[in-house]
Image (cartoon, rainbow, N blue to C red; front, side):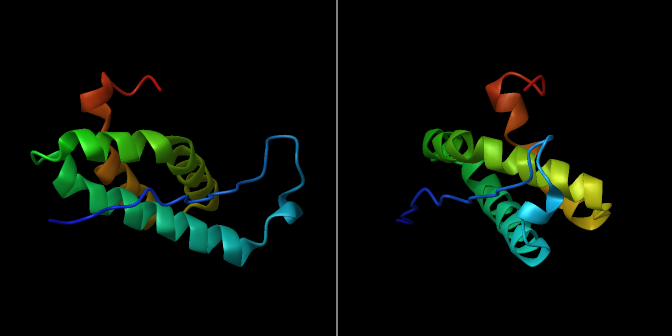
Length: 100
């Protein structure tokens, strides 16, 4: 049995009104990479009998995942944008769509 802990991703991205210098680029990059890796790790779980626990983990991390996605889009990091969207595609239909 695989045990998971909810990992606080802490994807702290600048607020719309905040100065972008408030976040170290290297730190934000590491956090975005962590968000991508976390989302990708949940895909097999979302498609398994352990789906409920994976949904809970994704829900807990959702705002961080969206912040990472926004940041990666702004940076033009298309590889990681595609990877994160691919992982989120396994999650979005299970919560009723992409409106969020």
